[in-house]
Length: 640
Ligand code: WTA
Image 1 (cartoon, rainbow, N blue to C red):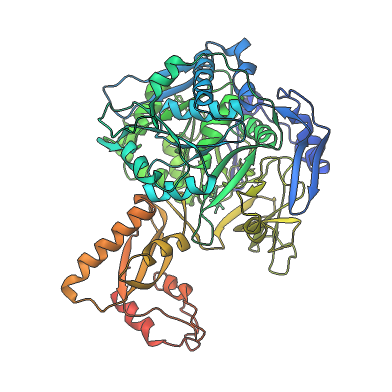
Image 2: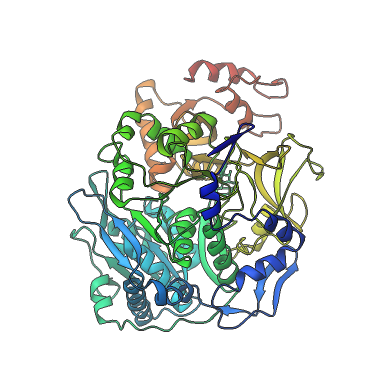
């Protein structure tokens, strides 16, 4: 790596060998982004070429209009002539004494065909929604591709989400089929997934459930509704022709947290998403013939969708999937995996990096020299974590691509490219070629250099940007296309730009918090807590945390004044309520039972003040509050 003015650049050898090293492309792409994306799109296999590349009817837009393709034909058949025997997926189980599985492109092709026919036998047709509630096992990749093969829309729900969270999502998509597993291994425990799925199914439209056998556990069974995956697939033919999909037909719906309590179903389409997934992967992760790519994100999140599944497959690359937690049974499990499978490209979140840094002595025991490129995603990476990653994992020879994107954008939109750099701690980099971003002040004027503002994306956006919120166009309009009008996409992130045009992401400007890189809305948590019969109102705020970036803290007001001795039990039932509604990932760092919350005279809860109690920031003017005395009282009970 070459160091210049506080930033790093790739070594000459790396630069020359990289898939992308042509600086001039930024300029040509910027001049005519539509033409640029069209050129990239031609590398895919289309059943029918598009008639118009980009159509904009604010707040809606379309890409590759009139084009027809099937993304799985591009992930599978397109790779078969050259890569039939190449490994598409390496699966590492959590159990140390269990063998990994390797699926070649040829094998994956047959498995996907079989699963697609099995789904057809259950009556799944083009446009139907299929829920997928699976852990990190090969069948999750097979299921997603099988849906896409026959034009069904998959909606993956994170396996650690609670039955209630699954139910809400299944109700929203009105899925008729759910694919799940008997259970899975997590930190040495068997987690019963089928039981959780069963609990979710009442009041949904699910008619059939396909169950993967992972742990061999006894499960409750409803005849006629439940089918074992192996039985169903054994009966299915392997040959399944791909359905030619309109470029703008939906490929998947993935729920994410927004400002309000209800999760939003982001709709992603076939053509644009495929083009963006192929090329962002190729240029940002520099997939080469011999690479082994490990994206640690769970497939329940967008990172798992795009860079665990679709992007590596579209590029004919080898993707590694790990069932368990990266620090189990010991904090060096992730190092062992890199060493064992000779991983060359490693993509993870800053929270994981900060956690690994605490166990440096473990890291030093392992040979990580197979690595040539590192990535970071999901939350801002602080300089300390960046340097630790750079020195101890990349041994100062691996570029670090800090990639900014969102569930909504479908793929990475801002980063430095590994063949060009610069890699500057604290900065994600430049917009990907063909992507137009800007940083605007409150009036909508572009911010000068180094001044914080709101990050936006300008037309023609990017081909993989969401097209709608499922069955909720009003929410789509309000969330993304109102802040700066219907022609500018508002990201809800604060950012600034340095004099070289590199972008630093400051963080969310809405009520979303990133807890260990997971996106959680404070509104959703408040809803869950408010459902508790003894809670009359509550406020949730995100506060800084050394490892997880941010963590939620809850202030709850009880409807009845509970006796002191009953407080621990009450707290526990509120925690249980959160587990029930959302799942263990949303558990707060602290829950304070308070007698009141700071409010304005019009009754608005001042979360900002609660948040500031945990930082050194000035509390601001309290005289506008109707109950300023409560702030002192709360201050006395909080632990910083
Ligand atoms: C944040 C994850 C700083 C940001 C792919 C964004 C980041 C939200 C970065 C989306 C990064 C993502 N640096 N912040 N490199 N990447 N974010 O939908 O606030 O789970 O809006 O998608 O994560 O989170 P989501």
